[in-house]
Length: 365
Image (cartoon, rainbow, N blue to C red; front, side, top):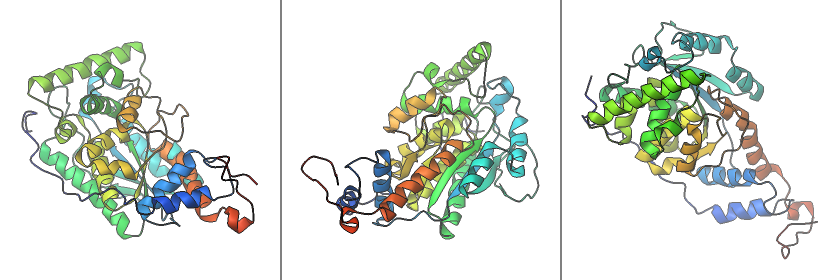
C-alpha cells in the first residue's frame, strides 16, 4: 500500500466541456410562451432549460433511464464507525437482487432499469442476474490505520466506473441515476467532504445508519484520528489523494461514472450524501461536470448541506431522506420527466389561441 504522502500515480483522462449556450435564448422563449404565467413552473423550468442545453435540443428526450447502485465495503466499518456490522452490505445487495429494497420499489414504480455493481463487497455473489461483477477487492483497508486504497487501486476503480457508463451510452442511454450501498460509507463521505469543502469535520459527521449519541461520539473520535494520521503523513486536499485515502471502491467507481457521464453529455441525477461526495471529487477534477447534474434531494445527513453549499446546488426534494441506495434520485425522476414533458407537449399561447400579457410580467389569458 502506498503511503498517504505519495501523490496518486495516475491522471484520469476525460474531455468534459460545459453545454454550449447557443440555444439558451430559444429554449427560454419556448418555456416562457407556454400557457402559464412566467416562471410559474418554478424549478421545473430550470430543469427543462438545463436538459435542453445538455442535449442541444428544443425537444429533448430522456432515453433508457438507468439506475446504477455501486456497492463496496470499508475496512473502517470494523472499527465501529457504523451502527451496523459490515455483513449488512452483502445482505443488502442480496435484497437488491431479490427486488426487496426501497430502490427496487421506486425503480419499478417508474419503469426504471436497475443494476447493482459489486465494486468491492467482502462477499462472493457468483454470477447473478442484475449484478455487475466489477469487484476490485474484498473491501478497502481501515483508513484509521492506513490509506483505504493504493493510488493504483483507486485508479482502476475509477476507470471501471467510467467503462460501465460508456457501455451504457453506447446502447443509447442518456440519463443516469446513481446510488450506493456500503456499511461505513457515510464516514468516508464525511472525511472527503471535510477535505474538499473545508467544512469543519464535526459538521460533516452525522448519524449515518442510525447511531445513538455514544455511537456518534465514537464515530467522531475515530474520524478525527484518521484525519490526524493523514495530515501527519503529509496528506493534503488534492481530490484524488483524498479519494484514495478515505474512499471506498464504490465511491471511486461513482467518481469515474460521473466523469464519464458528463463526457458523454448525459443527464446525471445526483442522490444524497455519499454520491455527492464522489461528485465533489469529480467537480474538482473537471468543473464542467456540475452543469450535467440535477440535484435530487436534500439529505438529512448533516454533511450534505455543506456539499450542496459548496456546489451551489438547490435540490428538487426535501423529504428528510437519509437512506441512500439512489432512492432520492429515483423519487425525483418523475419530476425530471415532467420538465421534459411540459417543454415538449404543453401548448403555447400561439398554438392554443390564448393571449399573453407581456406588460404585467405574467402571461395571462
